Length: 248
Image 1 (tube, rainbow, N blue to C red):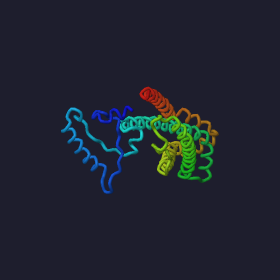
Image 2: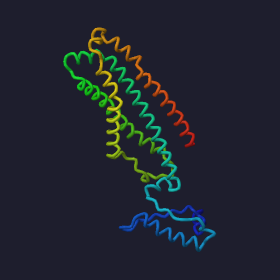
Image 3: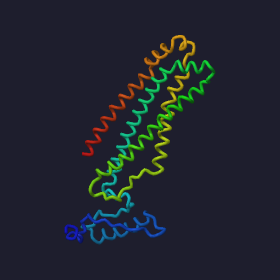
Image 4: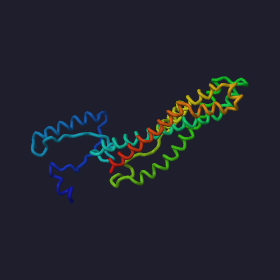
């Protein structure tokens, strides 16, 4: 009733038009043609159509409401920023744990070096372990994403229909997750691997690895990682709180 009563009102903005482009016609060409009509209407009806124009957008962009599309994009970008900070915190934590693990394995690395293992081989072994660990985490993350997708869809606003948005995890998502997990495993496992491969063989074997482990536990790198992790966690908590406040 409300739409029907106001349909002939030129100031009424609750009407959306959906159209299919002709073959060979781009969205920019269609928008230019419609803007010509809008300019003519603005000239013929300056009181009602003054300052009014036309914008052509893809139907997928209009699923959440074309006037709110930019707000949803901004909210999604903020969420990705928070996710990126959490990933960085996890990577710093992983690097710190790998350093601690390397300290406990200093005697093992020394024995391997003593029996002929090269430094490159030791680094390759430790990087392989960190990469497997990261890929396992990426696989677990994908499994949670499959489950979280259904939970997220259950909380969608009522104006979004079942087929309005596609939240499927396609090959691009899988390849991005695989590449990101592999890259983070290599980057944040490289320093612990290099440090573990530089152990003093004679000192580690004579002291049973206790001296090296104690030195590692007091190392400047581990202190920097701990401080960085606390700082990133604080930034993430503040950012998440501001984001929730903005969404409210």
